[in-house]
Length: 279
View: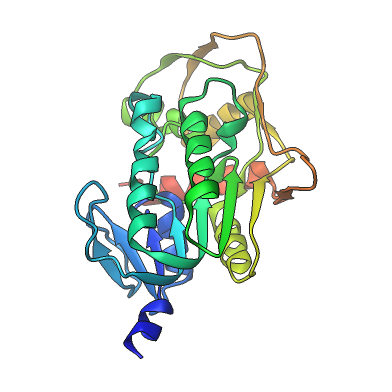
């Protein structure tokens, strides 16, 4: 009976990520164990265990119903190296060695399609490892593009957050962006993504899905929106003339299109940030 109880548990790694925090607020169930290396300030009554994946994992159960893996180094420019992100593969090896599960859900990245991208390179290595070594009955891999979550505790270095960091926090008034003024993004909400991941995790099947949005917004329009909401003066230039359209595309019917309004998502994102930081 004790073994059955343990097998019914679902393990969630990466609680402190923006998607992880969103997931925990949506599904604060007793049969989840949420793992985090750092202390988490969350109002929901969830089952949290603090665990450093670089250390001994003897406390992990031998069996689990599902394993959700979102643990990863922060998306920060200082972390942009293959070596930094390949730590994920070491974590996966330790978890797979310790715990057998019915279903393993791995959150990869849309960056796997970008040549020479350090995160994309590491994520592909992790995907390959799981495909060849996972001791789960089913392996579900998600490759999300531009997920937007109103969890502001750890701002990433994605373009929409660079504006906040540089012009609101650091009080810069002039900046040169690495990309092109013709770059475009398709944004999706973390809430809808979490709902989709949770729903599909109940399916007894393996798959690999891209998840994103074909309804694009240009970086210039993002800047205009940012300026209007925060009423800041900005002097900026772009280094590149080659545009980058970061969007999910149809690849052998293996993509899910969120079809959300990127402009409205970003508008809400910035307004929520403004409310939380108005003082």
